[in-house]
Image (cartoon, rainbow, N blue to C red; front, side, top):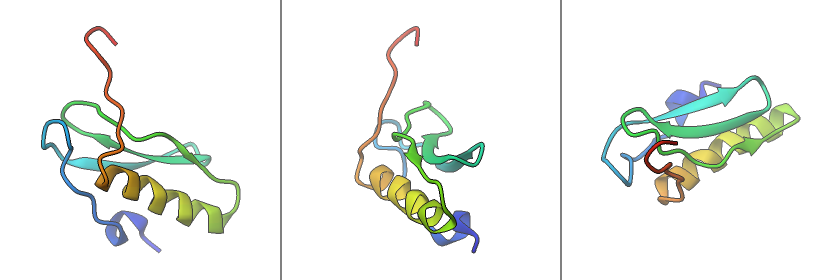
Length: 74
């Protein structure tokens, strides 16, 4: 299953840039804006089933605008 193709991502709620679904060293997923760096929380997983659900949750958070954005100097 190619989660990158299966899950659609809306544009960044801050800048309108493209979101990118990222897996972090086999323990979590998050979505990050390729332009401004806004991102979702890390969705952790331990099993293959949890891995898929974590990716879906990260995409859902992104698409609902539940993202973090660092301030100047961060």
